[in-house]
Image (cartoon, rainbow, N blue to C red; front, side, top):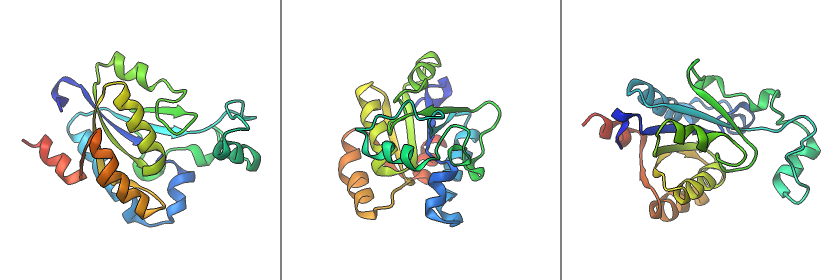
Length: 190
């Protein structure tokens, strides 16, 4: 990872009110994300906040999409909704981009790739909620786009612990380095 040349970025994905709240008011849930965010800022690594949200009336949602069509039927998750705003515990600074996506992958319908390429970023540090959703989808697409990838395994969270474990231990290592937030910090201090 060559962060001295601005080639690495941290993606904090789906750390928005409506998703973080599913895990209750447990402060320990957001601690690894906060630590990763602090490490990135201390090392001048760009941070991108990725959120999922939809326009009023849900024009981006197709009825064949089981998950997102259910959201459009029940309401909420629009761009102005509180549920799509970045969680206060990892509040973006003025110079940090908030990127909206319309599917699971951080690249789906967003400006993420254009921004990364324009800034010469070729290495991504992935973290987010959920491991089986945004992290998996983004990892697969980013690997296909030839980004160098690192997954912060303790800064990924999933409602299904078994699925999380299989992804972290068996699936992700095929396409990414999988390390803890602390191990990532140690690589930057060398």
